[in-house]
Length: 192
Image (cartoon, rainbow, N blue to C red; front, side, top):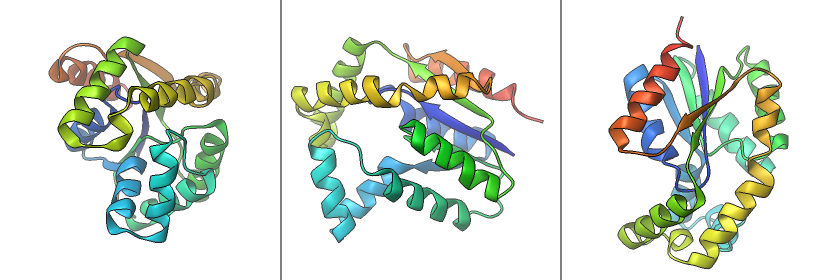
């Protein structure tokens, strides 16, 4: 089983590339962002809480996200593996994910980071905000805060996976096809 964390700052292209990888390698795509957006769209209490937090450019609580991930893993008992998109975002979540996977006799194979510079991230997010109407992508202040939160909190999990020899950076610049080819080449190294 191959379990990959596709990692990178907001706007790095994780969602697009995770879907392509999931299709190519027949892996189950788990996107915390998508799960949260579904809750927001449903108007549930959880969705209302999440919307308030996300609109401020902050992260949803670890406990809430971990519960959602555990539920999704349980719903896919015959998966060939998982691509985690947008999770984990903190070292606490990384440790909890390891614990959760160990309970299921699984482990993370690799964390693959899409490396993209801040200026490119900002441009991508503003364009996405214009086309999708997502409130978290339409304000330069919120975008800057999201990238700042990423750099301060989320990027620290790179070291967590480096100590396990599971960290693999990939250039996230270029066309979707070029980035996809780089990722495919990396993932092939992990296949049995």
